[in-house]
Image 1 (tube, rainbow, N blue to C red):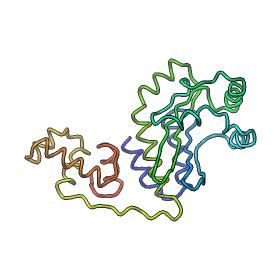
Image 2 (image 1 turned 90 degrees about the horizontal axis):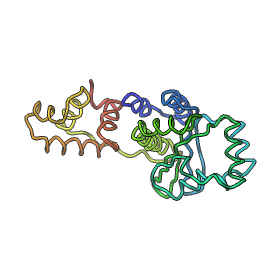
Image 3 (image 1 turned 120 degrees about the vertical axis):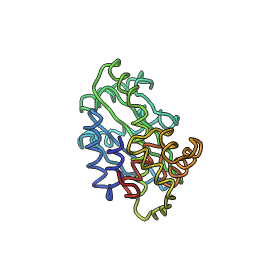
Image 4 (image 1 turned 45 degrees about the vertical axis):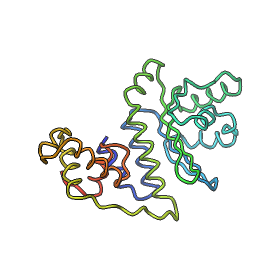
Length: 233
């Protein structure tokens, strides 16, 4: 995961983000990985691995109006497993079968993201699998998928045309030391011992560094620090 976050950090264009979505699909071992957003002006953009003929058919058929995934994610803040949605309507069942026929898969997991200024995005993985196998997959990978979704969205926001990059904040020497030791595998207790400080102080340094890096958690902070050349391991 650290390597993948570092790769995402290096993306500089939407074309590179598209290629990254293809690599992530293969890494996750799923049939498809999709990212789609709508900003406050109603402008839409997306990237991912759905077949072009399915994307075109989705638009032509007006599936947006009946897609339970879209409707379900608008109502939730937490990840949505497609199995938990209502697929009972005739039109909805026909839509699902059409999606399966186009290779989308019978299982899916979508993560809704609400960004700044009214932005709404979805990060989705889909696959063909039994209910039991899919439940095992989502249980094992839920945390990483959420992390990927939000980091993917953060990168997409950076690439939004006309968006002013957020100024980077420098890490203090102690923050650099703490993050570097974590990167090489030290526990927080070992970091505290190595720096001759308390574990509470270590937590303060780590949280401060995480905030400056715009990271979602400690692993994310380490990945961002490495990608930006702030630490060398």
